[in-house]
Amino acid sequence: MILLRIAAVAALAAMSTASAQAKPAVSPHQQGTEDAAHNDSGTDGMPGKTADTDRTVRIEARDLAFNVKRVQVRAGETVRFVITNTGKLPHEFVIASHAEHVEHRAMMQKMPNMQMGSEPNAVTVDPGQTKDLVWKFGREADVEFACDIPGHSEAGMTGAFKVMR
Ligand SMILES: [Cu+2]
Image 1 (cartoon, rainbow, N blue to C red):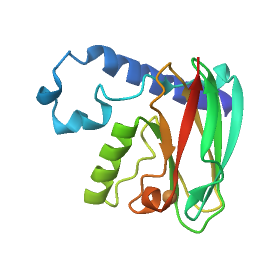
Image 2: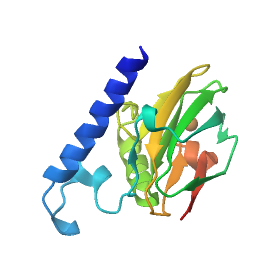
Image 3: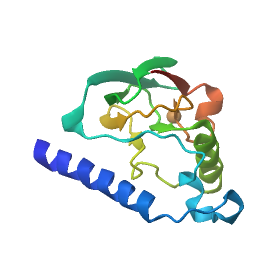
Image 4: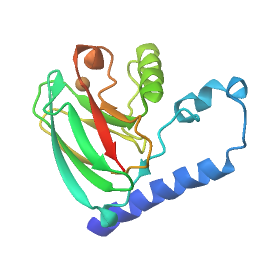
């Protein structure tokens, strides 16, 4: 089961690497809406491999806040986030730049039933559940975590990463 997990994470990482390499260089005004969530305003972090975990950080998602507002990480560090939902509502844990969060929220306003859980930078955690998200931080300081379900970030389900170089 652990091996399967690692394989799945590795596959996701390989997919995102492949799509990044395959993406042609385009100026911002040429980018289509389908690529809006993965444009160049994104963070330089990427999904990490469980096997490379440097540190595990436990986070509690409540209605409607995370138990921490700020998490300090080192540039290049692979952090395994273990998110437990102790609330009564489903919540997300999404790692992205500020601009990407704004785009995700706009998209979810239009499509409230869309699940972010299949994205490599997001997990959806149902009440009582615990899920993992492994993330390798880059040097970029503009990276935030949030629940982008409509109304949740506005109510305070956001937090910041402090990236130490
Ligand atoms: Cu939420």
